[in-house]
Each structure stands twice: as structure tokens, then as C-alpha cells.
Length: 253
Image (tube, rainbow, N blue to C red; front, side, top):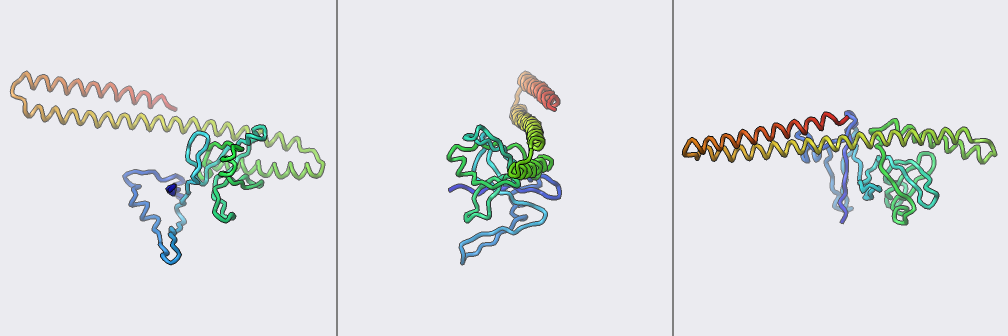
């Protein structure tokens, strides 16, 4: 059975909630209370004006990242000379079963699962519709241009200028996506370094606690001296490691 996963977006703070001392499982349950209808075998969550629940659509992109509602996707059509569309992941509530889908603004909404399983499309998460409004606006511009291009094409009118404008916007989206990818990679690297630093501190405290216990049991000055020297070396070792990690963090833009 596939678990149902959600992300929670704070509309007032314009950010996703992540686990912390303030944001706990209990806090999330408090925000979204559920009701159970035993007669209809159903479960529903209360909607809120200040928080959004965004569901995982149970598919992964080409980098094996789970796709959630609101993810902006770069869709490459493998059987159409790698033609590219940009769209937003969602559940298509107009379908009978709420199909995981991608909406291409002013164009169409397609069933993601069908095209992924037939290897007709490759998708990559490049941004988030709630965090990256500038990219979402560019998607809307592309949708408007595609509509105008189609209209002029049907009327036998020139559309080269519009096509060039559309291609320039697509290049702008790709540049913004590359910048975001680098920023996210740097954030991941920093978080990994901070975790490493935290683990090292935990190890140091454990060693010092053990040596303090040994110190209590020491019977002569030689033992006390050896234990003290060992603790001093551990502190120096941690100090050097701490400095090296902080230097690495400072070098990340």
C-alpha cells in the first residue's frame, strides 16, 4: 500500500513547514484535524485559509525526486524530438479518479502516469509554483504566446517574432532553473556539514563524559595526567575539525 504524503505550506510566511522544535507532529495534527464518516468509509481534513496541504502524486522525476502538487516540471517529449513543455504538477480533479497530472498553461492537462509508463515523456522538477512566482509568471507568458502563435498560424499570418519571444523566455526559465539547482545544492551541502558538526559535538561530549568518569576512578597522579591529556587532545581535535567545517560552510555562496 502506497502511503499518502503531504507537504504543508505556510501562506503568511511563504515557506514550507519543516520539522523543528516548534513544528512537531503534534503541531501538524493540531493544524489539520480530521473527521471520519463511518457510514461512507471516508476521512476528510479541515481546510485552512493560512496553510495549504500539497499531496505527493506518487511519481518521481528523472532525478528520483518525489513529485508534489505545485512542483514546476520541465517535460521533455522523447518521441517528439525532445520537444519541451513546462507545467505544474497537480491532481486532475476533472477526471473521475483525481489523476496525477501536469497542467500546461493555456494548452492542456495530461495524465502523467500514462506518459511516464509508456516512456513518452521525461520530467524534471525545476522549481515550485508557490516559492518561485517569477518562473510561474514566465510559464503563463509562454502559454499566452503559444495561444497567439496557434491563432496566427491558423489565420496564415506570420508568427516568427512571437516564436523568438517564446524561445527567449524558455531560455530564461532554464537559466533560473540552473541557478535554483545550484542554490539548492549549496543548501543541501551546508545542511550536511552542519549535521556533521553536530554529530562531532555529540561524539566529543560522549568521550569527555567517559573520561570524566575515569577521572573519578583514578588512583594516582599518572592516571589523572594521562586522562587529562587525552581530554585535551580530544578538545584540540574537535577544535580543528570545527574550524575546517566552518571554513567549508563560509566558502559556500
